[in-house]
Length: 79
Image (cartoon, rainbow, N blue to C red; front, side):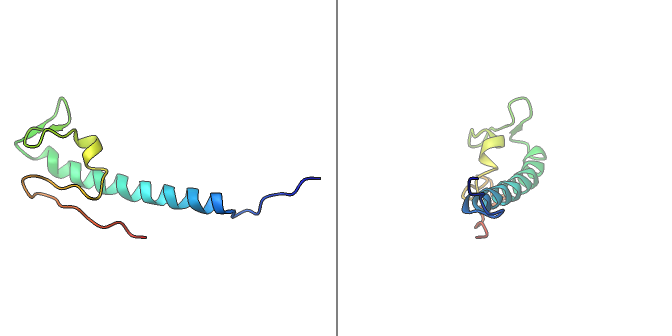
């Protein structure tokens, strides 16, 4: 028969790492959104910051972004 891939092939390790990064980013984004929802510049209908104009579901996922009002900052992702 054909050769079987080892259980932890390079692709599996890469996918696990990607999932871990996404989970961390999603958790951090939720923390940031909690702060945004309490701000007077938050537009609930559009989930948008009226100070910078960014759509927060996207902006809060990226580590190198920050709040224009200084309510949350950028962070370095763990390797």
